[in-house]
Length: 96
Image 1 (cartoon, rainbow, N blue to C red):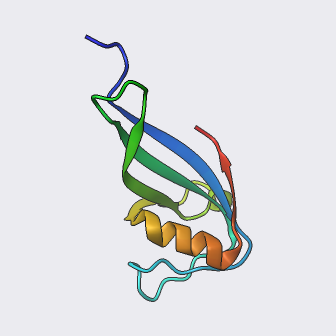
Image 2: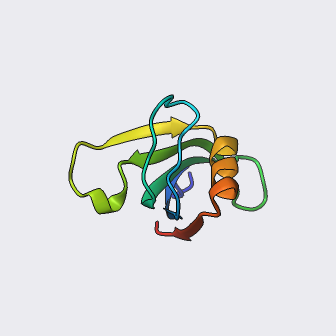
């Protein structure tokens, strides 16, 4: 039996320099700022090396700077996140 966990969550901080909208939240605009992104991954079994596949991607709303207001975690498609990052010239930093 392996002592390695079969799932993990990685965290990233993304900085949006302009307001943005999420595809699944119609009519909501989110201000520029730093946002936490979490990605759940599961280990791919049967390989001779350690590898993971992404199973879910979440964005934490509102931005980090807006403090301890009511928070929500919204699931989004990884491709939608990639498109949003490219469209807004966002920068990201791995935070774990």
